[in-house]
Image (cartoon, rainbow, N blue to C red; front, side, top):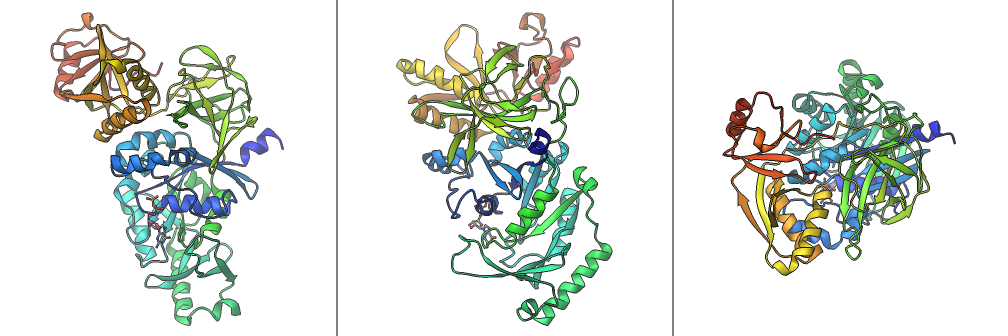
Length: 528
Ligand code: GDP
């Protein structure tokens, strides 16, 4: 297979949803149909950081499984499928947003009874603002649900995107027994078994006139289905690949992940329609996946995947060129060459070493502390910088110190590693060695930090919340001596030793900006 063939067969996507819509179940079923697992139920504990710290802790116990599920891949119908996991909790959306930067499309799971929910809306917005095409899977049609036309209206009203049903649920008043594929005009009826969705379901398929179908469907159901289909043909939007790519239209599929209703037809069609890796923007211009010069970026760092070894894995999305095990690349942010050794790929519950990987693939690199989230690695002769990476301004600040000064060493190591992972932002103050200022986007981040320092580094910490809500960097790292009116600001330094001004509120930040008209203030750190 040529490199081009390899690129064209990649499908790298994330599944997004409001908690409980069925993301975990659908992921599991895709793996089941993809042959990556043999019995559903093995991708446990994927709901990292949902709801509360206690849940997170519970999940953490099963870490071995949950974190290797961050990226999953399998081959199906000639495609190489890469599924990226996105944590569900709102406080961790930072992690989710970053993961979405590494995908080429997204599957939005909607609960048939609930329609579009808050978290779905937020995630949808990130995808659409980044031009990521979205496919909709309406889940739980085995349960009573909304009328499919109402769901289409809901998607349009709340998300502002038109939908194009690729299939349609068969049944009246929410009692569905199958789906009808609009393109092939084949009805798929599912025969329930006693495996409660843990195994592939038996399916009966045929034209609406076939005996196999008519003998199983009430004439009322068939005529109601025909009416719906007619209406869709007349008033609905036809499938249009261009409109899908530009985010104006979402192909819509109905099914039920738990009972396997429509999962396989969805997988097949989705892989057919979903885009392969596309051109990506960099500060130096667009980079095509077909460009032979290697490039990629780190979108996630996970420390302590194996708590015994304190290892750190940097998850890297390959954007162009071919990755080969052991290759040396330029780390754009430090300007140093690094060797990408021991690259890992993640297959359901096991890791394997990769020899070669192509644009669209995600590899995990053992990192010694060089790489940071958002960093670019590339061919040294063709340096590029991926810059489109969302950085979220911290809004909560606290002073963190170890309870016992005997634990200083572990404290420093733990804070340093978790900062690099992107779990927290860490700032230091001149002449203060025994504590750090930390910044977070949400309260839960603080809680998880305390818990992880205790659990993974055996350090109890004290966290004193500070009365600051906003941080400002400056474009040229202007030192505090050159600024006027910083009496209300706390001057701290980020991990790259850049000055950061912490202010009690936006108003004070505005005042600082006004007093220093020549200085360009930034809400997030400069990229390089
Ligand atoms: P997530 O929070 O989006 O990952 O949702 P889960 O996959 O954990 O599903 C949430 C709940 O909905 C679980 O109890 C699932 O068993 C259930 N569920 C998932 N898919 C279906 C479905 O197709 N039908 C029904 N009835 N329940 C489902």
